[in-house]
Every structure is written in structure tokens, then in C-alpha cells.
Image (cartoon, rainbow, N blue to C red; front, side, top):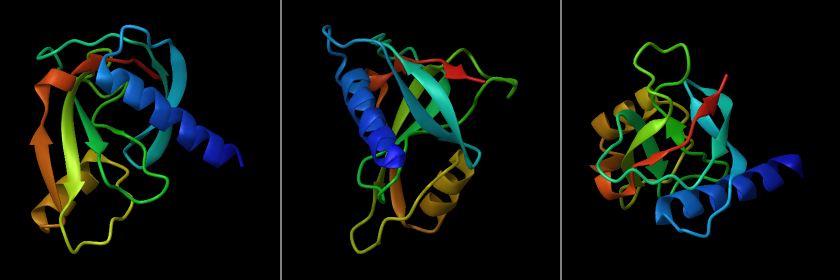
Length: 130
């Protein structure tokens, strides 16, 4: 039950962030990073064309799919969650499966399972909590 609530909270938070709604409120969510689940504070802070940290939003993923942070605190190139948004879409004929790291995204792309498209208009700020 907690997992279902958490998934719903993350989905709602990501929709709020990615739509850059002026009426969105700060909330908490979860992301995947290097195969682990990390916490995040989702706040309405769009930074179109200003993201530096890679973020992968799976548009048609498997159940339980969270957004994927390419970096997090302690990763060296982490810039506080100034996310450069990439849309990850499973290709037609491929059954979606969980992607839990940027390496998994790269492998799925190399295998022809997904298409990755940069979406700079959706860049946003959202810090990862260690």
C-alpha cells in the first residue's frame, strides 16, 4: 500500500514539475539513482534550457517506474538537481521493464528498446536528498 501511495505521489509531483504550473506546491517524492531509490523535494522551479544534471523521465514505463537521476549528492558532477530532462520512450513492440539507472537507460537505448529525446523546455530544479 505504501508503495502505491509513493508511486502516485511521485507521478503527481512529476506532472506538476514538468508542466511548470505556477500553482504547483512543494512536495516529496522518490527517484531511481544507480539502482537505488532516493528521496527528493519537488518544488515548482522550472529552468527551461538551464538543466545540467541528467534526468530521465520514462513516458511509458513499467509499473513502479520512477524518474531516473543521472547524478546525486556525492557523484562529483551533481549541481543541486538542476535537471536536464530527457524523455525515455519504450519503442513499439517492446514490453516496458523497469529502468533504475542512467546506465540501464543507455543499455536499453543501445539494444533498441527505447528512444531518448532531450526536452530542454521541461528542465527544472529539484534537489535529491542524501
